Length: 184
Image (cartoon, rainbow, N blue to C red):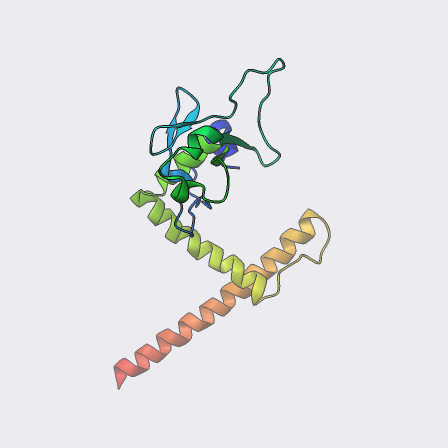
């Protein structure tokens, strides 16, 4: 979805990127490895290469998995002689890093997430998402019961109207309470 937004539609993705690369067991995460764009490989902290293929094949391969990732591997001989093996890959003979084929779009989204505009849009998005969550949980609009596009529009319009009426009564009640408190 990020790649579609960035590459095809030229939309700045103001959405969070789920990053599950951080490790909790004290070993090196994939962010500790340096990505070398020109060579198309990762470099470990000691400078050894992690490549997607270590030999030439007769039939060229894409190396793209079903999860839309490419697996980069070090050599077993590099890892066996490495001083950082116990911090890098203590339970395997060599290190593997899975890189999404859409990693460039993910990096753009990560860069945008550090800006003030992202913080502002995140606050605005939270307001809207809270209203949708309220519709789904409190007003039980978890599924539409009327058929067709016009039925869905009518049902959603009724639910949104009910939600706005509830919000208006709560606001008017709080304003009335504050004016009574000010008068006394």
